[in-house]
Length: 514
Image (tube, rainbow, N blue to C red):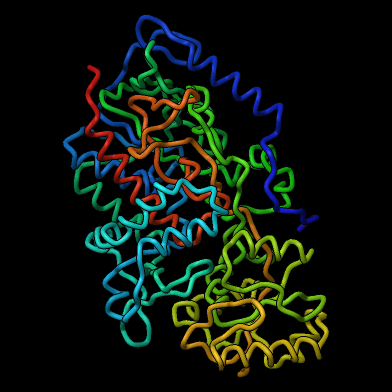
């Protein structure tokens, strides 16, 4: 996997920051008596609509649907050759507080607790107001997508399974049947019902602004090659009300992420779908958008070096965290809570210097994870092993320390108190004591970029003078600052859907400029 490095926060590369500020300043000052794009060329519009949504993942579809329901004419574009954005590859887990499944299972939760958990994970760098909106609107948004047709994984009692999730102080995360594709599917169906279709292979090239800075529309390249982002025809599309950026993050852009954290080089794979790159963010920056937290880039701890990309292993590894153990190969000892937040977990794994070893007995895995187990074994990223002795031999782990550690952990499971790392032991967890054992090597991959354009409470993009850019909104991973240093797992689905809907509603309510 290459040399692992320290994952502590780094300052934005000085020269890059200065150059970026210069570009943004020039873009903000560029203008002419009519509309301007790039270096001030007058624009002759080829097409027009009320609201243009750039991106077609959770946030993009949610924004488009909300804008249409707000009586706006809507166009959706996407640079890829198919819709769904990176969301179509996501697990879709959704953190919801004060929900009916929680009430049905006697679980008391609150908006304050949800926000507190986000702030702890984010090292208090979060936009608190935005966190509160996510918490407050999580249940109504979950009800909305459920009403559109999303089904949720159920437990052995036939109730919606509320997952123990890293960094959360309560059971509030639900898993959709069919993962992120299921959520994208119902959003696509709803958009289709409304007559909305995603125009694929259409790349955003410029935001067009007038002399006062208002966004008037966009210039795109239609019919591009998805891989090279070249070719196609230049088209100017007027947005009479607003443009909504829902273009995701840049986890797959190695050059860009290395400028913010040099250790995140090509030796670290990304979990993201091809195309998770920085082009749209660069367009926004050239138009004067303020960016925040670009150097906070999250790694996913539930990944395997023996599995390409996001792969299959995450499904099983993530399911094993609540009920299994992760040990250092060199010592056979645990070194962190398996249910801590992603930053602390990844920092601990990488500080150990090599892939760690997850051990969970098969009986502890939930039914939905068992569906993936044989596939993981088949591709060679998971092993089914009959004894602790065989595990130690296969992975060169000191046997006696490993046996002692598992025995100690099993006392924590029986007492439901982790005396070493404070892990929240699930009520239905069983001791890791009955073969077969499912064993996987664990090593992080680049997963989510917390940085992006700064937005206000109405999802308007803020410029470098700290004023809202009229006619420009953003939602989802392209919007920075919400999650602080580290996004709390299963909050991205809530963020994208909630802020996507809000951005679409506000865009539709914008005053038309023509």
